Image (cartoon, rainbow, N blue to C red; front, side, top):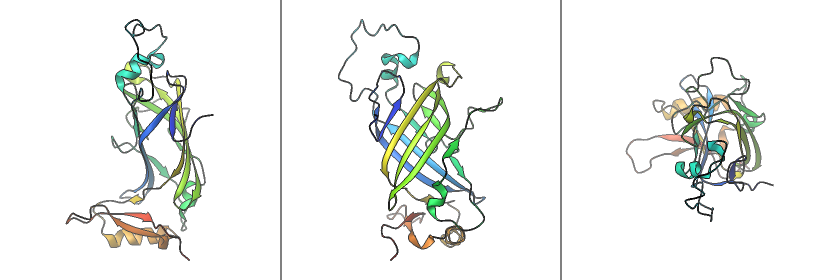
Length: 236
């Protein structure tokens, strides 16, 4: 059984997976008032928990692909998979015309770049960018989010990887991770929106708006920017 809060790249040289150094799940409102989810993760160094060191003979590995090579993994150090780090798309959330509560947004499995991919699939117009063994590609994302406590969630995320950095466009490889008790970071909205405009938008879309609060992103700055985040306490 896999350990929570680690990412596994199936059948790579590290069967025990990799710990995460960073993980963030947030929401984003675009100018057209569409709602998106963003996810960002960064692992520790691939070899952080590996006590074995390759000697000169082992560095001349007999492997079938870069995926199987511990030397290659060590050369690229760590993974970043993100919709925010390189400004990729994230996942657009379909919302009905009537008001919703937050958990309505996560009741269905979130899908991004699902298979089968279109014949004209653009590897540069994607939900998530990935740096794995170089700047590779990931697709067929399935993300299940389960509420566990107030503003705490379990996240199951799986997908496919193609080693496009070395010219292989086929999504041959799998990843998966299970995260426990993740906090939702809040909703970010366009910087040119006033606090009043943002408040009017969220009031019109969220039936549980009163459970949120605006949080100052830069309290020490003279420039005011906010995100909307669920309050710590539930309404009585």
